[in-house]
Image 1 (cartoon, rainbow, N blue to C red):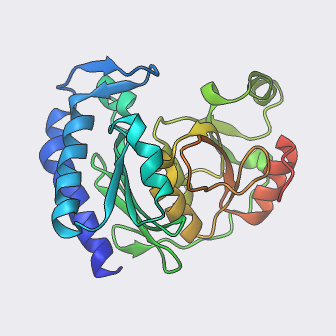
Image 2 (cartoon, one colour):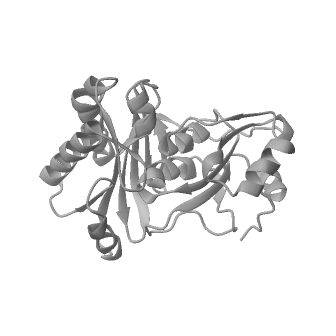
Length: 264
């Protein structure tokens, strides 16, 4: 890994240790205007990471999930390098005492993601990626090994609540896979897919701070992804994205065929 990526990992791990984990099971929850959950930890972690990034790289702008919404579009459209942070991906889990959540940090440059760090403080797993150079878990390179499973033998990672109702019903009544999971953290979804812990993925709606770093980890591991409309998954925009993915090409082709996705 590059020195820069190690430095980013150190920042994220330090803030998770000092500010996030001491608040686990000890903070009250509230709700934002869109109904999503917010805790003190979301705010404090964002403040501390932004402070550390500004100290080391003052020339790079900052986009965080918990910043005022009216400021976000202007930052993304500037074309300048930009940090993109989800200070607590899986806030509902965190607030409920469920040990599955992460901090997700990405560096956006020239319309794409250059660097990504996703840290799971419960398992002390740090997923990192550098565009064009690879992805790692705790410093060990992630290698894409053929799954060699048919769709009906696979484990699917699916978030049902954001999918079209007819598709959700079809998945339940005509189950094409062996079993299904939903863990509640988009950033970790992508990283667990990259690590081969699940085989196919489907999510109906996630935001750029949720997926930017994790998708880079998945992409650099050699995974395949698209949207439910068959478009390129990552776009440098605030519009929520639907995701369809698999680490294995044969399994990916079988999955999008079952879903009726027209590959681009």
